[in-house]
Image 1 (cartoon, rainbow, N blue to C red):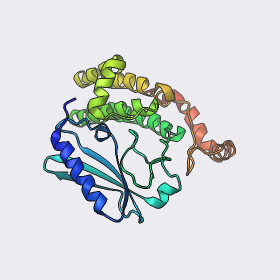
Image 2 (cartoon, rainbow, N blue to C red):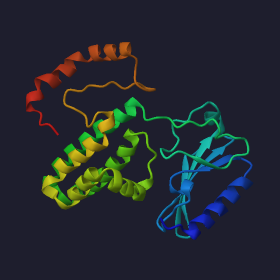
Image 3 (cartoon, rainbow, N blue to C red):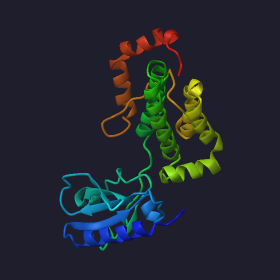
Image 4 (tube, helix red, strand yellow):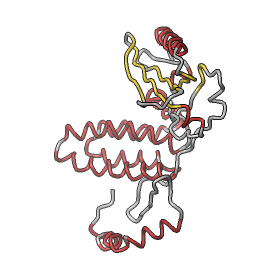
Length: 255
């Protein structure tokens, strides 16, 4: 990958200014910025811990022609071990005088998050199937969005840091040519788009069970997967509603 001197200069300038702010306690990078491997179109990805409650989560701006994503987190949450919102690519400390990143652990994808992806992928394909006939132009946009999400989900499902779209394409070309071939073919074959994207989704989500199945009902809690007793109570409470699913199963087209 070509290294961009302009990105390196912008990164150095931003970190220098952040270090001057009394409220800033630590600065880290992620994505291509952590490796300092940029194309001319890459952004600068930064993660900042501040010593006051964070009123906003992120700032996005350009310096010259370089886009910058500045993510902001407060020290109290970090000190309490709330690392669930660490970027999927992980963090690399750039300035950390108090060793705030020393105890950081990357939270694995939760069963709830995996199931949301499985459900969402299937729902997206159902939407695509509908829009192909009603609005082909809208369907093209939905294919593009689904392709991006499928690539990201591939890395999520395998607990791998997401290397950005450029890196994902290179990785899939070497490691998962069948998945990449399905994604590329979907762009050129409107008639088979749903079928091809379904295949790609199943490959991407294989480690977490593939796409959502007709017979599945999975409960989600406020702070993660609920315990078995809570799940059983919830299912019992809405059993009549769930039974409708079985009655209508014969009229539901699989997707």
